[in-house]
Length: 189
Image (tube, rainbow, N blue to C red; front, side, top):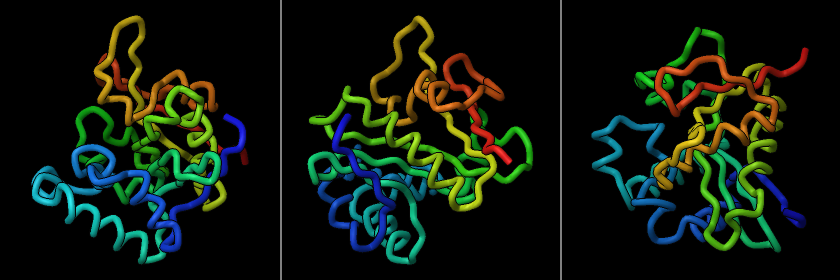
């Protein structure tokens, strides 16, 4: 997709995330907090509380992810941060860490309906790897869906798809269920 710019989410860019996510907070009031919370915290926070939690993270100076712009308008999102910022990863039977090596994790994508199918997720994925490596990551993980020859629930696409991760240089390092590999990118050096 030509004409795309990708930037870290900073306090100045917060209104653009709000514009991208809209009233629903991307999907069902998530505001990209699902991986950061327990099930109870997430359930109780859906909507306004999750929005406020993500805004606090952003205003703290932490960068919880990247925003993509197409034609100057917010078009896509990718959540990327050190894996330990996502406690649900550590508790997951499907994607829990395979070892104790420090890693960054790419846990979520959201692309506006208008920009879907144009390769924006692949651009966000590459930018997320570059961002993580520039901030000291040696290992970057993702937990995409791998539909193989079968179909996948369209709602599961927020994890990304394994073929996109492979194309970005990730390799599968574990698979505890049929359609959810753990994939890693290991930085040179």
